[in-house]
Image (cartoon, rainbow, N blue to C red; front, side, top):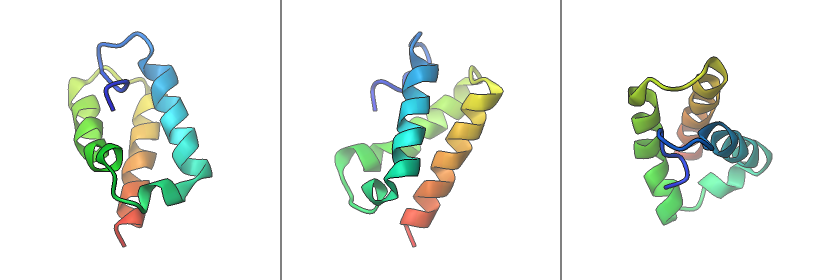
Length: 72
């Protein structure tokens, strides 16, 4: 999840890529892996950084929702 660094100039592209990947393959979140386990903390740091665009905030919200669904 190091690619989702708020200081990265590629953050919008990387966030969009993760969002699209999870949307097309939600089963990726059903398996507990190091990347999946790090995702909630990474999303929190993105949200708290306050540097997201409206699209970025929507994508983070979608990923939070996908994580909640995967935890059911």
